[in-house]
Amino acid sequence: MTKRFTLQQLVDNFNEAATNNDSACMLQLARQLLERDPANADFMALVLQALDSAGRITEDLGFIQKYVLAKSTDVLGFMLLYRAYIQRNRPLEALLSLTFALNVDPDNTDCQKLLKTLLAEINPEHTHVRLNVMKTNRIGHLAMEIEPWARAVDDHEKGCFYIFVTASSEA
Image (cartoon, rainbow, N blue to C red; front, side, top):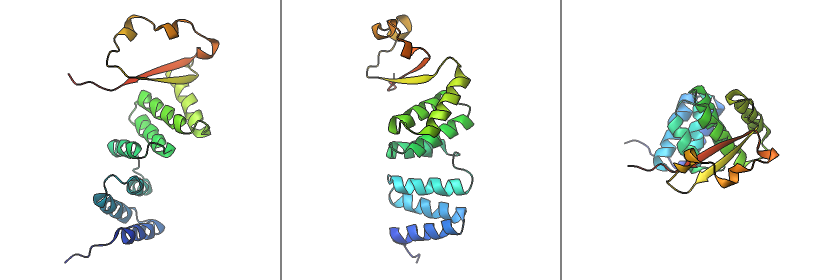
């Protein structure tokens, strides 16, 4: 019969493995914790810590996305998404990740620097990002005509990189 550890025992064993820099054991224990409570963002963070210890933190993009959905106020989660997207040569998704991170913590200087650098790589004329969440499935009019709010450009809007986000609709 296999001994079943309590959650606290698993966490304690994880911390001991972390102290010993045993990333394989850390990952095994973190996954056991996650099996017991799959929606627990703290246990997801332990998996990410174990992957970081193994040098594989951005390997599983889907898991990082799941973590960010579970803990949407964690700037580090968005920073991980940024790194994962950059490694996959997906700069627009990386830009979106940084934009969300700055919505959580507008004063984060690391995010600000990364955003400015990435914007300069995309187009040196862009200096800032504006995220627009569309609440309608109809976005075709955006390609046809400029919205009234965008017709008159203020000086502070020059250099703005606009991102329009909408929920995907299945046909």
